[in-house]
Image (cartoon, rainbow, N blue to C red):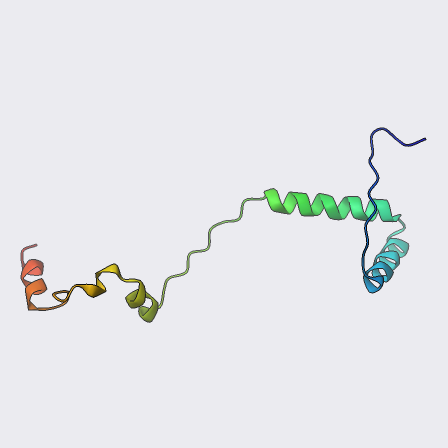
Length: 87
């Protein structure tokens, strides 16, 4: 009689991976169900852990390419220098 607290899944995995799983289970003294429960628990927890944002400063070339002001002819010209002196 099936346990009402558990649900069965049938999965297919490559033979070399199956061999590795069997070896791990034998060494650790547990069955495949325990192995896969732990693997799924680890996977589910990893997805819910917030990752800190990674900020990477662009290189000068990347910054020039993405600069929305690159199309203004007066940028970094004498006309622009007049505005800088007003500060």
